[in-house]
Length: 285
Image (cartoon, rainbow, N blue to C red):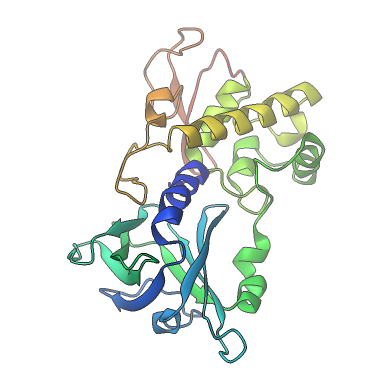
């Protein structure tokens, strides 16, 4: 957490706030969240934010200077891996850091308005990476990311399952090397929607089940994005607003309650080291 829908919502709420804004200053408040291989934050000073993107669970800020032919760092990326509790929040330039503020970028928007972008992280596992395009492409983690679940077709999805056929299906869905962006919430919801037990091996899924699972993943992710993500703990978008998909959860966090489909009591088990909620009737092993 945040997972793909939450990160996508952060990107969509962040983009109109900071696109074309100039980064004028930066401050690191506490133990630095910068990766050891990262460039210093000050290399971003004077850069303009030209794009805000998502890849898997990463937020990417693309920045460029106006001196493209003279600066060794004319184009840079700032990547934020939010991990468990990371957040990117746009605040007024007078906003003070709080206990969980890790760093701040000061920006000047195209209309002259000033604002601040805070990276906050309660648990402190989030990471920031400032790098050149070449360094980004060479970054092991970037290279290892699997395809986007909203972009793959059934043939590619089948190939992914076949390549890791001995793996439990939930463990495979959580593996960012196999598919980038899914986490505990949307793996549980998708498997329930497809009537598939999370401990089944990928090789055991029939053709119809694989098709049903991919359709469930994509429809649930799209719906969660429409509802601005799931706020079950601390997740907020770039404006500090909560999501609404927690009101649509069928099984995640619902152990002990009645299955919304059959009325059976939902059970909590552990798969791939993660708490997992299933309906023993709708998702037989």
